[in-house]
Length: 636
Image 1 (spheres, one colour):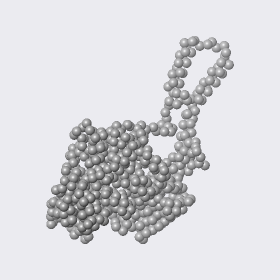
Image 2 (cartoon, helix red, strand yellow):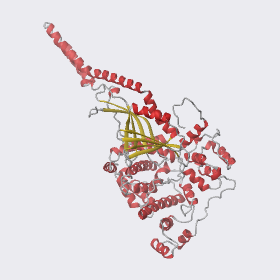
Image 3 (cartoon, one colour):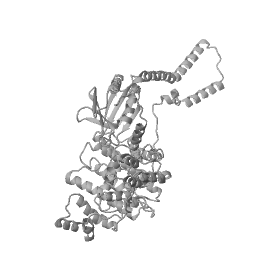
Image 4 (cartoon, helix red, strand yellow):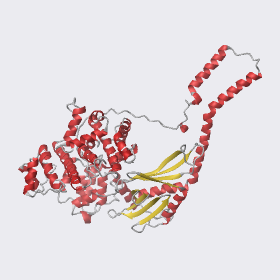
């Protein structure tokens, strides 16, 4: 029976985070047992949970595991869709096996349902992740007796430890009885000398002091109940002086910035004036060129205003995916790194808060969707610019250490209160680590710099201003951005009366109106060579994702390949060495569809759902498929 004295023990066997199939689910499979006295343990079971905005869990006993294994052994997945469901107590465990229409990949949807609206879900690949998940269940079933015997061993160990704990009192009891018996048996024995008594008493006192009462100073690792961890203090001027140890003050700053002509400039001035005013050489955006400054200001403000005004006009959801804004900086100070670390942590924290609250409230201020969008549009250059030379493991340690300390001093308290009021789980260390892993996989040394991003967006027709232009920053923020935002949010600038009102309201010059209404400006970048295939163009775009030592040979190979398919059996180039985007491009490349339309190819590559790791696993699996009649799994 479970009561207040019950102690639970869990060991995670399998964990998976959906970062590619839009459920944002987190699946966890653990082996669990419990005990009330550490001398007897209840039968082990599997604890299975899926969390989205909140968590649902099931307990799978041995019989349930055997049932699942038997089902998956006998089923066939030759059809497009196969559905399976099992009821456990009040909840239903639901599996749906299907084929992704875009990539042709076999996927599995898993849900824990209380009813049609109260559920959590996750999507994972069949051939890699789901097989590993089922292997854990299978191993639990096959090794069940061994697990129980291991718990029996722990029971015996616990009994032994209890005896050890009782030794001090037993020794004292035996000693006192011996003294009494000796006194009764021979009351005529002469008393020992005074010096001997004092020496013995001092020795006993020293021993007691060393061991402690009931040997409390003797530490046995196996029976220590708690592992104490120290929180390292972080001396952050940004946290102390800019936001006064309260993350909500940063949210208020961005609220004040958002409708100003240049929020990025205001943010930089606040950082400098509040904490680095004595250092005249310090710049928040250190080493940024004039063109890059115009690009980060222009793209960040355009994205924010268009998204925000569309929300106000027709209730359109704010985007949850935003391109990374970073630039190439050849030199910066350690203070730039310190600010970047703090802002990266806050970025990841607010991202998790938004994910938890979005399903609870449609209000973009209450669910922090507005704050997160502001953060991405206005703070990205202060963060990701300075991370490309960082070691990922070291970065993870730095960010997690900051999270622990800021958590201990109450920097996040107001957001924890919001989560509590909405019955949402708090942000934990694992959430921050997961976010850093995503940054490592998709951003550090992988995402394009602002110059390339701006060129790409201009070539695709997403923005009207090219990355290299003759306009000043003041003209861009005060005239071009208001005009372009109005046009992108449905204002008909072709009508004379509307155009006149727009000009007068924003003091837009005739020069800007002429530029904005004449159509797409010619790009000053060098023209595409006639003999360059679209594959060669995209490889050149992602040249930073090709290791320097093989770059010359790889480019020569791609150029010679022309409009042919990429040969993944080519052993000259290891896919593991390439970046995420480049591997996706090579995998997506289909000359029949993409040789004539670069934009379509780029879009298909960019929207590829499979990650680099899954693509490589799929290629290796196709290359080494062996049919076995002894396989425990029959997936069709």
